[in-house]
Image (cartoon, rainbow, N blue to C red; front, side, top):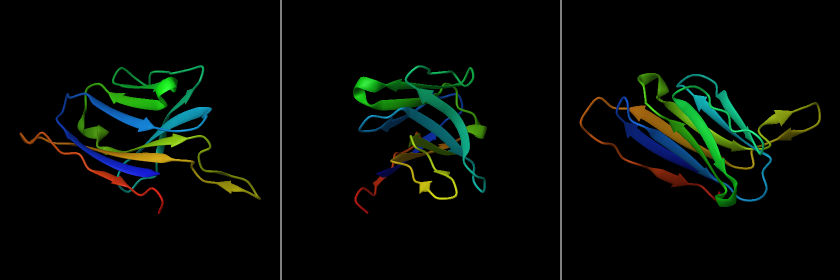
Length: 128
């Protein structure tokens, strides 16, 4: 399942990105990707830890609802990027095996200086 959500927000606004999953998952991860760059690992959430990234960035898993949320408390221009929610196992490899993500949500966050409040777009490619 791949879903794409686009959020256009103003500087200083709170952004909450959500990821729903199914099955039993040992860990959840969030990545950020700037245009022209490779994805950057932001946080690993396990059953035993939900660390804060900084004063502005945090993540929380709600296991009974099978959701994980990534929050940007006060958006800045440098937060404009693609954000990925990945379930364990992420892409890993050795000499014999290469595993792909079980599921991934992609969230696009862009900041707007105009009075336009924004729009949301969802693409679901499930089954393709």
